[in-house]
Image (cartoon, rainbow over all chains, first blue to last red; front, top):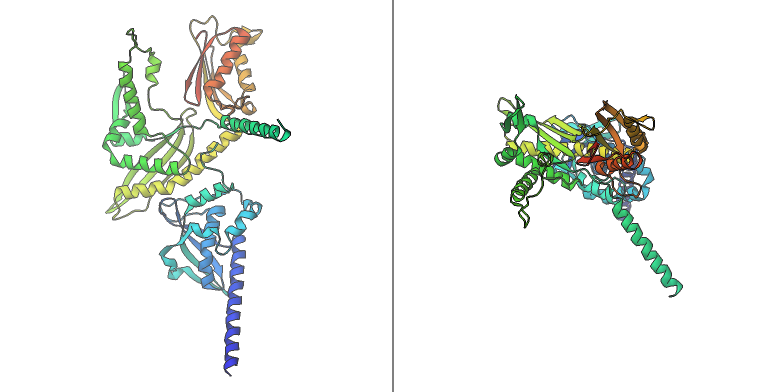
Amino acid sequence: MKSMRTWIGLAAAALTAASCGTAKKLADTDTRQWRYEIEAAGVGAQGSYLVKVWSYSKDAGVAIEQAKKNAVHGVIFKGFTSNVRGVPSQKPLVSAPAMEAERKDFFEPFFADGGGYQKFVNLSSNGAIAPGDRIKIGKEYKIGVVVSVNAAALRKELEKAGIAKKLGSI
Amino acid sequence: MNGVTKTKILLAAALTLCASEAAYSQAKKPTIMVVPSDVWCNKNGYTTTYDNQGAKALQPNYKAALQDNTDLLLVISKINELMQERGFPLKNLESSLKSLDNQAAEDAMLMSKSGAAAAESPIDKLKQVAKADIWMQVTWSINQTGPKKSITFNLQGLDAYTDKQVAGASGTGQPSFSSELPVLLEEATLSHIDNFNAQLQSHFDDMAANGREVALRIRVWDSFDGDLESEYNGEELRSIIEDWVADNTVNKQFSTADATENIMLLEQVRIPLYNEKNRALDTRAWASGLQKMLRDKYQIEAKVMMKGLGQAQLVIGEK
């Protein structure tokens, strides 16, 4: 009976891990397909943008974690608009969206789990989600997370990799 | 000397050549300086009034503003810091004004062993002002609604020669009960600087693709025997000049904004960033080509005067 319980426990853990893994993979696909929304949330500290990213996932935890990736992806390729007074919209750091496919060698490891993107993003308010920012749509969640992206350092990294043109160069 | 050594020497020579080419091929970057706008100076009382041939004229007094207004100093230093970080080093207004003062004091005392003073024409004197190729003109005003304060901030990048606005960012910040003015100003600068820089970089990119946009003014000395309508080999002098300009601009881009028998103003002249030797080119060097052509082909002397990277004046008749 005891071994039976152990087996059931192990199977449940494996199932949970598998579903989490699937949700993670789906979230990564969403990022690549630009399935997220990004908007200004306030004035960031010097060199950084404070943005709110809306991510989708069946697993709320995955959506929160994916928000960091989406925020960096958004600042690089999408830019963001603003409804916050005094905070202007920003253009993307890279103006050619095709660059993501052209420079797969850089972006695939950069956006992989634990990849370079992590250096440039921080969750604001320890990732606390405001009550109105957790919305259930059908079977999945749409979750709005406020994050801070160090755009100045990110731009330097992209310049170093030859992806963004160096500012001030003719 | 064996073959391997020869190859090494050849490789080293090739690398040196490449390095020197690369050093030459750095385009001349426009200099940028932050200044308070005329409106801001006027509103805050930092102007001097002078009599301009009978009409009262106001001139911004940057020195007084910098010595008196700490908010201005904060905004300028913040913009300088952020622009430097992002790859656009700026000239500092306060330091430029101090250098001019020091230079003027030194010039007044300058004397040779025989007692001769340094030559200075009225034009030389007039040109001794703070110079930049792009002015970053900053304006802000404080809005007060009850106890709430907000800042309206406006940053304009103006090309000193074409008078065009090449970049800009403006907006009104969030109203605040408690934030002090310097905090609001810092916030406004931080939020607008990136958009400003993106536009400035687009201007630089356009320059790289289509050449530097400059202006050329042609005049004649009254001692010149003839004018711009005088004919040489059956062609008017101004047509000769226009043909040369067309042949020496990127995609023959220029427009003749003004043309009389004595004056010609050529605007939106797109000069290449490098000459045929792949060296960086500015308007003076470019206009010297026209001066040379007039002298070599038509025996007409001319004087080239420059104003920064983007404006030149050619006065025909003598030097």
